[in-house]
View 1 (cartoon, rainbow, N blue to C red):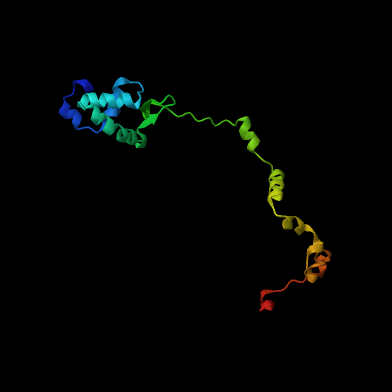
View 2: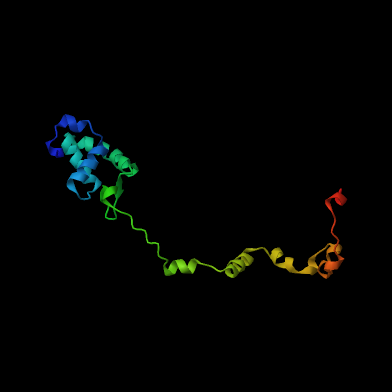
Length: 150
């Protein structure tokens, strides 16, 4: 049944959001929030003062209700009337975002403090026992059992 044919008592049993949904379904096109609410006010025979007092709340309700979507032109419609297109193909810009491991390391080096850059220099090591670590041969290493550690 068309909204304009419904008795006022029946229309009053619906919330503004439900009426907005019915209006958009009936019109089969997107409308501005002002047009939607004016139609609601006309159906419910609301005064201009009531329109002014309630349109802000109506807007807030519409923006939080997941059934509705605001389109690029500022009009509102039911989300069901629109599909979301997701492009999974890689674009040139996305290719630029792909960094090699070497580029990431270079960036990390640039961000590191000066002390970090000097850490590779063996001459800065203060531990005298560590001076000859690189000179140890495999046959000089001894394997110790866990029992011997205790």
